Length: 237
Ligand code: ADP
Ligand code: MG
Image (cartoon, rainbow, N blue to C red; front, side, top):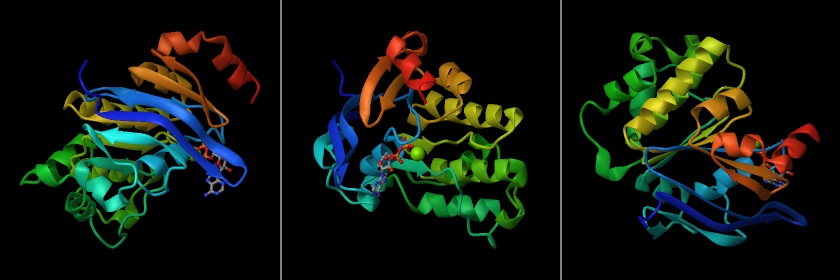
């Protein structure tokens, strides 16, 4: 068996009495989109915070490209090639779209720098035509693309995308999904947190279902879709 891109084992995080993430294990592979789903409070964002070193683990391990990254700081983890796209972009409002994406290229994956990275990231995020616009003039949908473009410019081996479709109209969602698929087609892994279930079922190679910090199901979209525990977790919301 080959080493997975990301190997999460027994991941746990407590906040006082609360087990926000409780013994969760899963993998992500290069070229694949894996979605983390679950009701609010399931622990999805906490998992992203743990994987990026933003929060320390209470227990468990995280291996990325065959090496342990739990305990490393956020900068080191970004340099190894994990990028995160936030739901709410906080661009440099006075800078153009291109310059904002350029900033993304300064961080991230160290063994993957070079010319053309910015233009490539702009194209992949569907931002080429907007490249010279000031970030301050962008719509919500365009800001979401900018957030992805910034992350793409870091040339990640693994992208963590937290609710990239939230608040978007269907046409914008389609564009964002196409960008994520294009990134995966280039060989990156994508870990997606998203509430839009039709989109998740359409775009994911695998789905990991969480409820109150615990993994309750995992598998291909069509498998988790008919899992009684998953149906119950969602109907019980
Ligand atoms: P999700 O992203 O799936 O909605 P979160 O990971 O944000 O869930 O939260 C999981 C649980 O952990 C929630 O009960 C939340 O209130 C709690 N939590 C998250 N972050 C913190 C924190 N920094 N301090 C205390 N509790 C937190
Ligand atoms: Mg969240």
